[in-house]
Length: 186
Image (cartoon, rainbow, N blue to C red; front, side):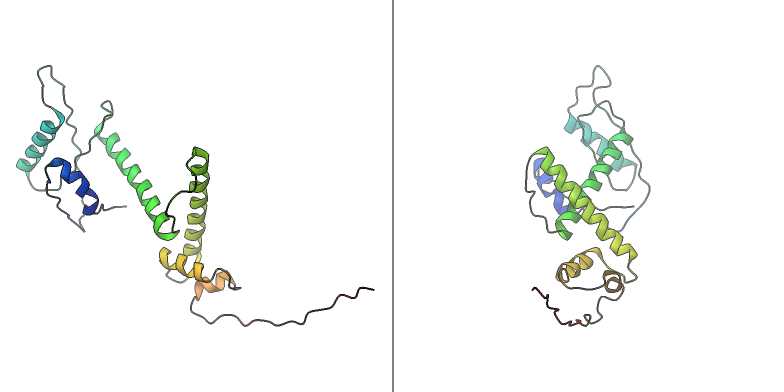
């Protein structure tokens, strides 16, 4: 699975580096080379973090073309692949919350205690799992956002869910009118 990070998300970071340019490269996937450049390995190494990053990026630019991602951490005992795995896992969490906000229209969390957040996240996970199951079970090619929107519109309509999932644009079912029976009291 490949993910892309919109360049707009890095504009706030760019201003901390003298408005460094942000270059967006889309539609490319290729193997990634991971290099680890720790600071302070030698006793006479007096570079700061910024100087170390500049030197590493200069070195990579001299070697050839390619995209450069710099991951900063304060976990100095972790290796480069561990740091990259942590960033990748954190990005999956970002994608999950993005899907929650887009599909379930969650603006803010109701409570702020640890238990309230756990309940809300678990409820959202269950809702997303049910929606994904409905999407996979359907024969119609639903996008998740369209499925959520049309389910929301048909929430109080009495329909056979499985039939509706496969044929969402079929007319509504006919309403059976039955006569009300009277209860004889007395």
